[in-house]
Image (cartoon, rainbow, N blue to C red; front, top):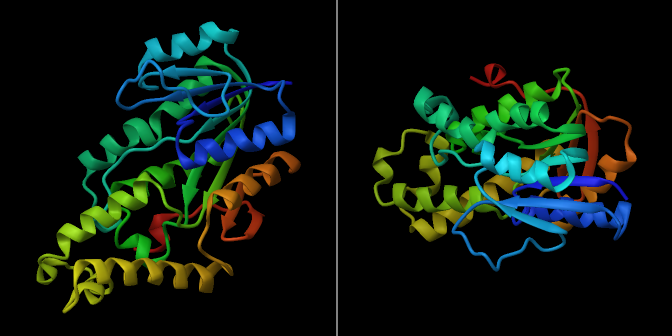
Length: 267
């Protein structure tokens, strides 16, 4: 049994959370999933008992969720994000960072205060590896904010699942923007990024860049090529651990840690 709230339930990470909840807590677990996009009254989030459409930063959406079970949740999984990517993190402007935080970070503490949640789970990535520093843009600051928040004391327990590169809306967005940049490689400032596109087609450069991320992840963390099954397994490890801070997953390798990734240590 138990009550669970998944923000961004239709995405890869949200689906991993739902699948893991069903595995751990069974069919009686009550899962409310929120999603936001092009509204479709017929759409339901797979695996959820109730789907609620709306912008989670809008109080009306929060009220809809609260009306379903008075707002008591054993876990809330905050699996949604939207922000500028495709440029070096250090070049992200304050306006872009604020815009990224609007959905990617700011609602987390608001929801924590508004609902009665035992454990809040947010998500990050290995944004400090060289390839991600070159492309993760404003989202890098939003993820750093999540990692700092993870160590703060709040109404609920704070946990962060930190995942290696997997196919997602964010990774697709980066590749799309890189494809545009590749048309004029002479304008790319970052030398690492530029090396992938000089004298090559954009398709070839993007493929090699992605392989570069995988190589760097494997060298730094021991594995790479994270997929939906790995994300699912990381949630099961979360449930089996006692108030973990960071649950790291990179490929098949999953481990716990306590320290945040601070951008000031990298530039």
